[in-house]
Amino acid sequence: MGCGNTRGRFGEGAILFNLDAGIALAQDAPAVGETQTGTLPPYRCAALLLWGGLAHTGGAYDLLRRGVTAAGLQSTGECRSQLSL
Image (cartoon, rainbow, N blue to C red):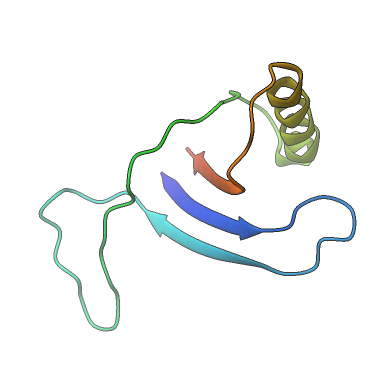
């Protein structure tokens, strides 16, 4: 399972963003070599479950953004993704 944080501009015209990517580990897993371990802080979010091919990811995020806007919610600009293979 992978997870990460992204910060930056998304959508048309977006050029740069930061991505902190990781893989879920056991709580007591040690850092090895040049790797680092850490804990992502919890946060409130709107979520959408997507299954199938990654080709539909952009459409899923668009649907999620429209739902957040329609509900009158305001995004902080942070996005987390969790991927299970």
